[in-house]
Image (cartoon, rainbow, N blue to C red; front, side, top):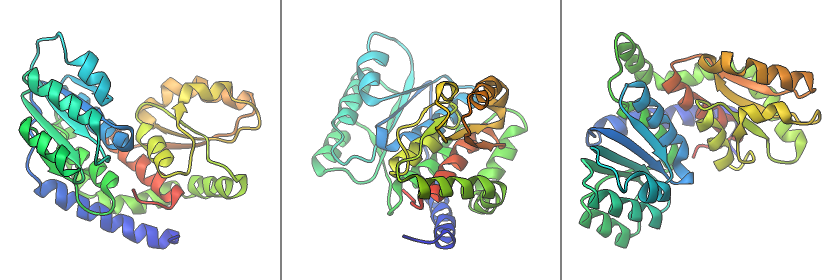
Length: 291
């Protein structure tokens, strides 16, 4: 297992490579309503893009592939773009979704995934989907970085600040290790002494971190942050949230504290779109894995 310093160096390299890949890949055009779909294995990346599209002011939906194919797309007349993520080389539900989107006249269909089984690749071509083939050994992290790059233009001065932050993502590892050093150390202490998976709670914008930690095998499936108020005294969970959401969850954290629950809270104070990505990097450091 790599040391923290080795992981840190590799994280920087992975982010830099992912940025280069995303910026040089074929451009995507998110026209009309944007339907972001994802299999569970790639949910953090899809969640980041969904937040980015929503914050750009465009109509957006986030769904699992089967729900999108059977519930969101049929019986409606609207212009939409589908962008779907998966890490499964034989993801049948993605194929079913693309079949539905193609028959219902999607403006564009993008499938973001590593190389899939040849039969599946052939079917996607037949259906007119644009394939964005993710390369490298860390496809989920690459997808997360790409989601930031693909976020549509934001309104006002926020656009310039946001793009600048995305361009300097690699150096954000320094900030994460400095800002959350105490929280990371405490979490690693609990993980090493507990002998079982960490229990994780997330706000909506903190979901990518909780899901990433679960996919890395270091935590149980994440629960909504509201549920932490009902935990027993002996539970010592961690929580991912953002400063923008803090006012909405003060009562929840206060109630948990009164009940004797002592969560380690990773409260990320950045742009709400990039915050989701930072939680995945925190999760990577905690789990000592880059997915």
